[in-house]
Length: 488
Image 1: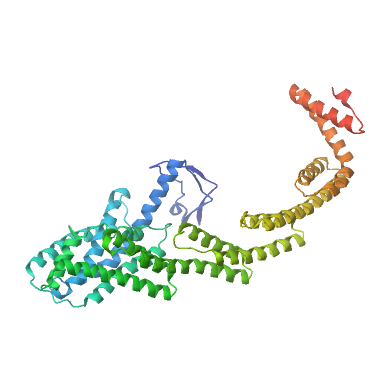
Image 2 (image 1 turned 90 degrees about the horizontal axis):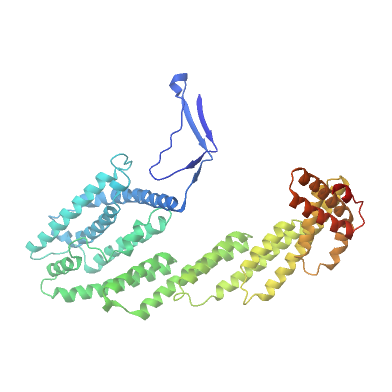
C-alpha cells in the first residue's frame, strides 16, 4: 500500500487559490494509494478570514436550503388547484413556499458557489422547480379566485389558524436545531415573514379569499377579526408551550406575534403580551439556573458555572423580561461555596498552582459591590497558596545548590523573591531568602564575570560595562571572593 503522508503544512491561502499535493499513484506500484494529511494550519488576514466565514455560512445555507426544498417537494406535488375547498390551506402553503423560495434565491447559490461545476445536493434544479411552482401557483390561485363565486372551506376558521401557526412553530423548532454555526435561513424566514409577499400583495389576496369564504359579510371586517383571533391563538399556544416547559419555543412564538403586531398596530396589547413574554422568559432563565443547581449537587462545578453564565447573559439581554435575580444570586452563592471547597482541596493536596488558578477563577464570578468580604477571603487564600509555591521554590533552590546547578538555583531563587512580593504579610518568609542569598549572590557574581568576559571578546562594551557595575554592587554588598580587577 502506498501512503502519501503530509505533516505540519502551513498554507498561506488567498481568494481563489488552490492547493495541489503530489501523490504517488498506487497503480504504478500495483497497490492502492492513500493520501494522509495532518496538522494543517491556514493563515488568514482579517479580510481573508471574513471571506472564509462568509463562504462557510453560504455553504451551511446551501445544505439547509437543500433540506428545505426536499421537505417542500411532496407538499407542492400534493396541491390540487381543482379542489376549491382546499384553497384556504393552499394559501397558507403558497405563502410558506413562496417566501422560502425568495430567501433561497436571494443567496444566489448558482453563482456564489459555482453550482454548475459542483452541486452535490442538486440544489440548482430544486431551486428552479421551487421558482417555477411559486410563480405558477400564485398566478393560478389568484386567477381562480376571480372566477370562483363561493368557497366552502374544508376546515373551519379556527382549524386554519392552527394550521397556519403549525407552520410557524415548525420553523421555530428548526431554528433551534440549526444554530448560528450552521444556517440562519430558518431564523431569517421567521424574522422577515410579515415583510415578504408570496403574491404581489398577500394582504389583498387574503381579503379576496375571505370574500369567497364569507360572500355575504364585508371581507375587510372579517380580515380584521381573523387577525384578532390569530393573535389570541398565538397567545394561547404560547401559554400551552410554557405549561409544557417549552419556554424557548414559547418565546419564539411570542416574538413572532410581536412582528405581526408591528405590521398591524391595532393588535398591540402591551400589558397582556408583556406578561406572557415575561412568564416564558422566566421559564428559560430558571431552567438554566435549575441545571446549574443540579450540577452543583453532583459536584460538576464547571458545568454549573457554564449554565450560570448562560442565565446571566440571558437576563442581561432581556432586562424588560427578567425583573428579578434572586434565584440566580442564591444559586451563585451555592456555586461559590462549592467552588471554594474544591479550591481548598487542591491547596490541601499541595497543588498550589492549580489552587491559585481555582481561587482566581472563582473571584471573577464575585460581584465586587456585594461580595467584598468573599473577595477579601479569596485574596487571603490565594496568598496562602502562593506561600506554598514559595516554599516549593525554596526547596528547589536548595536541591539545585546541593547539585551545584547555578543557573537553576538563580531562577528558582528569583521566582521566590518575586512571589514573596505578592504574599500578604510576608515578613516571616525573609529568613528563607536570607539563608540562600550568600550562595545565590556568589552564583550571580560568577555568572556576571563570565558575561563581562564574553561581552569584551565580542566588543559589546555597553553590556560589559553594565555587567561590571552589577557585579561591583553585589561585591560591595556582600563578602564575596571577587575577581573584578582581573575581569576588567
